[in-house]
Image 1 (spheres, one colour):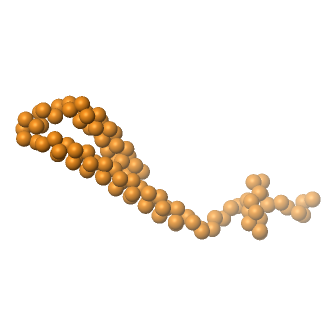
Image 2 (cartoon, one colour):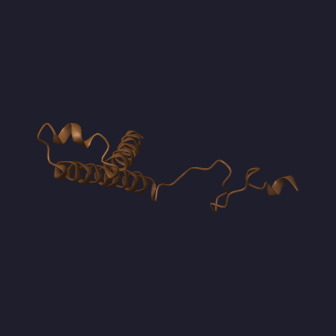
Image 3 (spheres, helix red, strand yellow):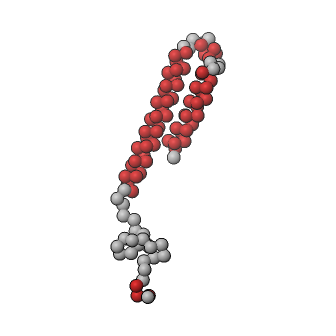
Length: 96
């Protein structure tokens, strides 16, 4: 599922970003150009929100898929008239 793949990608990026940001790796390149460190914190928060949104969409899609199957009657070729399922087919009383 695509939302799951994107969510996993963003999660990996967030982990890598957080690790580098904690060590202040490469921050000087950006702060020297005028960025504030708070912008990095905000970016980290934004990606966390994005991951949560994708998770909500994924959960909603799963709920919709489940709802479409809920209560659906499945025709099982191994079921007898009462709906009991027999892996080898319904018992044939006439054969015995």
